[in-house]
Amino acid sequence: MPPLRAPSPKPREEVPSDIDFENQPLEKFRLYETRQRYYLTGSNATKKYWRVLKIDRSEPFELNVSEDPVAYTQQEINDLLQRIADGNRATGGLNFVTKAFGIAGCVRFLGSYYLILITKRRHVGTICDHTIYTIEESEIISIPHSTVQTEAATSKAELSCTYPIMQSLQRNMLVDESEKMPYENMFVWNCFLTRSIRQTLNNSRWTVALIHGSFEQVKMSIFGRVFSITLIARRSRHFAGTRYLKRGVNDKGRVANDVETEQIVIKEESGISRWEVASVVQMRGSIPLFWSQEASRLSPKPDIILQRYDPTYQATKLHFEDLEKRYGNPIIILNLIKTVEKRPREMMLRREFANAVGYLNRILPEGSRLQFIHWDFHKFAKSKSANVLAVLGGVANQALDLTGFYYSGKPCVIKSNMRHGDDISLSSKVEHVNHDGLGDKINGKVKQARYQSGVLRTNCIDCLDRTNVAQYAYGLAVLGQQLFSLDLTGIAKVEPDSSIAEALMDMYQNMGDALALQYGGSAAHNTVFPERHGKWRAATQSQEFIKSIKRYYSNTYTDGEKQDAINLFLGYFQPQESKPALWELDSDYYLHVGSYGDDSHASDAC
Image (tube, rainbow, N blue to C red; front, side, top):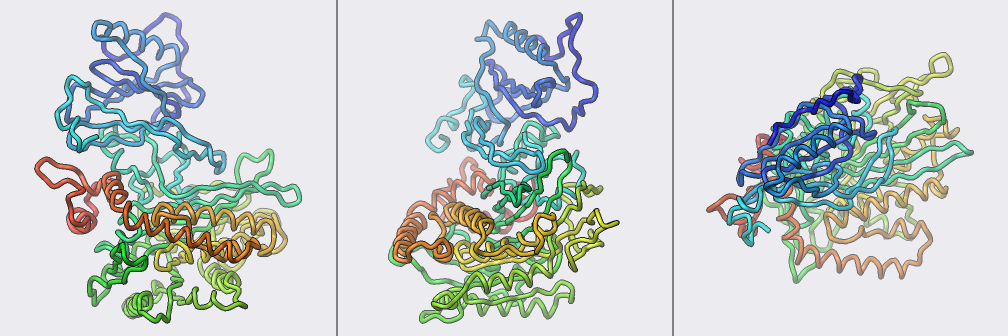
């Protein structure tokens, strides 16, 4: 077969010379196969620029991929494919396999490597002209040809993206837009699956970085002025899993159900190619202590067990140090668990969590001390006169005064020389943080950018139900200031009974349901939102009962298999000959700590 190189017809259309080949994104792909190779062709959005990826099919155990260095025009790529077909006619020719939108990863189990392709996507939103997609369908394709497949491969055990959505808007505005997608980010769930192909090619243009969580966007207007609200929930790939199988913290300070929530407001005005935007980040995560619950068929609420005694709270300290690197200071903790119970469960954790924070605050420097707020959500909500959202709104405003939020200025693009993947503390990197107002006007017209430093961390027991209500209250408080900073309203407050507040509540409810299904097996428990919508209490109670049954069934009967799949997907478990299979392990504890869980492991450092 002739080597892959550009054909040389006499007159030919040149690839535009102004294209940046190294950073030009590929958006549409077509996979072809011969007996010896797969050929993946990728083009930019206008189909004026084509690249070719070759994947060897003759080696059953190794992943051999190489990228053709030539940039092709559409006519040239057609000529090239025809030449490949002619050269392989004796062994079956060149056959089209599938269209795709990128590589989600390459994975090997006991036998050969598989290629995971995104074959169907759906447009779910736009951030500053960058389109956001969700995956609708994917296809797993065995790479080696059937003639070289091993017995293990057939055994029972084997069977366009341009916006770095894994990062906050503030961080994306602070980096050079030509930088590569940061796959080492903790929110990129296919980091492990794409590692081998990215390292081999030394680029990431063929792969698509995936986050797991929730994305929703709505467009609204105030007196004809259009804006969009975007809500993104990003689940961490560290110490990830299902409700009763992943609780608390591991030795490295990674907590279960660590989710970053970002609320973005973008002002849309015709004729402006740059955007005026405002965003805020908050997070949720399991209580950072060594604790667990054993799923039980006999009890829907099993006992809480404090597993290990950690007198100096080292894992807890590591967790808050990580938050400081991610978000800066201050770290504000809103703890919503119970203070009084007939049978002590949550209150044990409340007491130990308070002890941990008290101990850490005695040894931390003044600027890094944790701000801790206890509030018994259930006790307060039982009162007929209680206004849960009003109390949470007061806490939200206090937290917002301390952390601020990101505002781009009017309108502007902010860049720096910071590389993707650099650990930053925003409190040290951004020296002109302004929390004392909504930006200063220059000559009465242009507002300066302002930045968020610090974060509100909210938890209940599961970090699902009560937490989601508290996150909405914070989002509503921030929304008023976001709209005011963008000159869309005249006051820095959104009335809780307004249509905008109702739309935001629906977004947080949808986000909460998505996260609860992923982590707990049912939609989120919630009585506050339905009551705000005027729904009948008896109907709400029956719906909550059905959710409890669904969650109990998932936690008791199906979460084990789901946890196995997560451990495989994230690379925490890698099958090996003569070693126990994943489903034969009594526990996955050692997959997430020690030599498996340290920063050198594939799933943590990609």
